[in-house]
Image (cartoon, rainbow, N blue to C red; front, top):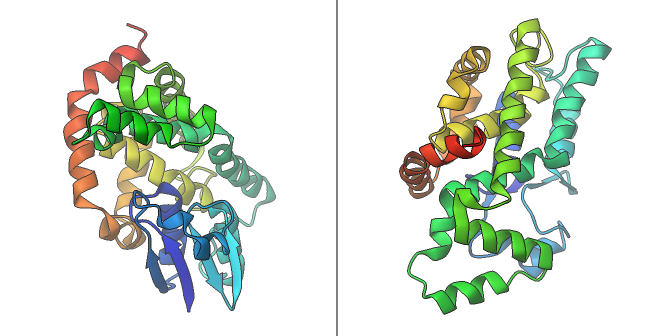
Length: 264
């Protein structure tokens, strides 16, 4: 049995649960409350010194970093394969996956914070309490970024480059999907697994107009959503409070998002 340390709404956790579901693999769940800091407890840091989810334990071996976990699972559970037999398509798959660690994941986290999750930070806090919470970030760069994102939302200077990066992701997907039904061609692969949580996050944040403007991406998402693994890995783990927050605040901020993206 695989042990999985994860969070329901974590995009990286969703990637790994998708791979497990596609492989038909069950797991022993260790579900973390990230707001409570479960990922920073000493016993977990002994497994994953980065203090992030997900992490798996398989046959006593600890593996972390979601992209690495996904490739590992694809190797040790080879049926069905989540990669093409064609070397070029496998290279394209790795380029898609690699982008997540080169700014795409951070961009998704930024738009999520600016559009919706900032309200969780502010809820029920006085100005002094909010400042104390934000000052709790030890890394000065992260403290500055989180402070501006929470206080300014879509008007944060960090939001514009982040939403533009998400738009580029969707543009690149739309172009790539002209060559085949999946991101690397004819084979559903780890590239599709990796991008699914991020496109889903755009939809959850009520920015569906960014998806429907790219019909090949909209069609891709429709086909992804009817795969049994999508329900098992994403829908069954949705936190209704988080989803309600994203729906409400995403709708409120839709015009502001459009204005920033279109440079108005």
